[in-house]
Image (cartoon, rainbow, N blue to C red):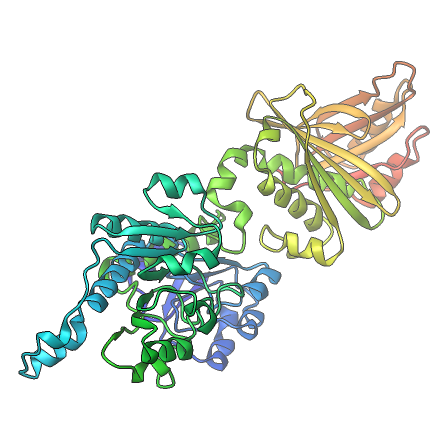
Length: 531
């Protein structure tokens, strides 16, 4: 396997990955240059300089993972990567301290006119009165986005004696108030409360131009703004106009709409009350090592057959979501595989019901596992990344419910497959907490160990059926590992099924021979990705 590392990433990344793959360090390249060579690589690791476009992703026929050594991934076409089944990872924690400290540094530099004062002093001048600043103590800092970086900024700001106002639709009022800040539910009520405002949100359709002429008009006259998040969240022209009019007293900006070429940025022509730095938020020796190590470890893990800890396009498999249900992932996938293989026709709906302990948990990771199992049985190239996308494109409705009805297992996952030709039900559970079993196939209560090769044989419940089926299997030199024969609960029922675990693949010819046995109908060979 081969990994391409570009954009001047710390060499520690290569040392980590080289135990799993060949690593090539190359300088930042254009789209056309990358397109020519990316087909050779299984993984790509970049910083912010390289734009990983849909064209590059399409050319990366062997790509399994793209790693961004940093937090933001707006330079990567996430949708294109997801549709191709390529994992995109970042390092959400590696530069937390660096970015938070730079925010505080910019805020202090802006408040005390550090940059222009330093320039003036180096010119031999002594203009103390010209650079009179303002104190942070007692001022109100408005924080938009209380993630890891925003939270650390809040801690330091409080230590400086500032009051805090927080807007974050994903943070609870209780958490915000517990840290000693004021929680504001509506942005319209937020702007006018703040002496300083700092943003710590990703660049999305909702946050582009979040701060503009209209929102600045709602702020206190003389407010000061800081942006160490992403360029484009603050409208640069509107900010320049507000600074020149005096509505905004100062700004400290580390990120820009067009990087690295900022010659067209209106703010570079502003007066001394604007501090500009060239995207230094993560530019500390410690942060560069942290993000490189973090992403390199994830690339190594994925290329070695493991999972990524910070996959941005598999939110359902984040460690905090996966951990409570991880023991059920394999049986969920196997249930999806088995259910689709006993079903005929076009799948319309997959209903997933959680019972027992699972009813109290977030089963989104299990939903993805079911989809991956079901779709990969009929299509190539399906994985945890693109399974939900493929299901949506094919018009498959996913219905997830929780049931408080008691069951005989600690946790039970029941999947109903509805096609244009009928319905089938498969249920999976863990026996004795860690033993995966298929415990139901349609109306049959079972206890089947999922294995790679299985045969399901519906048949009339009469003497010698097992022997006749076993004889056909044996005569075709297929070894039987185990067999489970189940009759419906109704004692008057004449139908049963055999579920047979075998050691090798079963051809259609063998199935035809089994089907010729009087009393057997529609036997099926099932192939699972069983562990």
